[in-house]
Image (cartoon, rainbow, N blue to C red; front, side):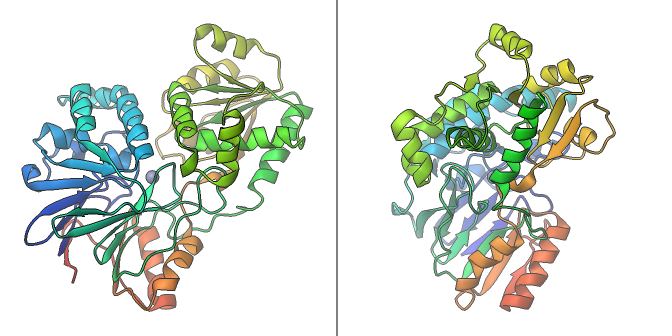
Length: 436
Ligand SMILES: [Zn+2]
């Protein structure tokens, strides 16, 4: 079997791996390359393989950097099937449809034809089969099994014969998703390294930190504005705030969710209690995950107006997570000169984003800036190592992808030093490896 790395070698995005044996070829992930733009110029290049010769695509999870080029694959003549867990299919559909606007805008800026349209997304969904964790799947000589990777709802790492492809690996102690499953006994591993050189701080005190922030907001009658990633982060933080209110750790406070995409995604979370951890699934089965008096989901302009008028204290969650478009831009405009504003960043802010400019003080706001980065959806260095270690005597080689150079180098050194395992960093120019 040969493995080809066609994406996420030089960057963290654009996941695209090809496996080939004498009989057939399959792909794992077909993600969008994202740099300063949601849709980078590289996405317009032709695929470096004959698309019609691909038998199937296995999708690890719904994030755009893993799924975003699937409709392009259809457009270029892919005739096989896509396989993922049922939640991944539902989530990817919403993510792909929602990203159309920004991707089309990027196409215009780059002077390019639309990379694909809704028609290809529809065709893609017709060629998409769902498979549960541990449900056996065989495609020619490839024996395939999906495992829970604990990253977002429905996310998987995938075992194919003697190889595991990690996809993205979930952080520990998350509020909604289950812990990731142990690494099975295999000889080869393709491993993500997004946080390969970092340790997440305060994982266990995350909820207490959130409690302190909200207590201050209530006491000082402030407006807490949280730029929110629509998938997982929004649901997780709402769930945690609700828990704080229900256990009377904080007084009642109104929470507004102003993100059409996050709203749709929240409903998908409620559809799949069996994919969530015990606490979250009990909550869904008893009263629904996001149905209560404190949470107001914004449906229209009137709701939005009432949200703005409502006297503080209040909490507003709005997309996008890096303040690059979305509802938050308008909301931020309202409160820019209000010293009662507290902006809470809970996720990565890309170099060119407005979020980054505010965080770095390049763009001034009157209120205060807070951070709580322990809400990351990715496992850190120690977490990755802990997951790999039990298989150190079975593994022959690890390939590092999905990280910037520093992250990959740091993780490579650590794995070689502490686990004595051959660890390879594939590059664009050296991207084919034989797996026995
Ligand atoms: Zn991801």
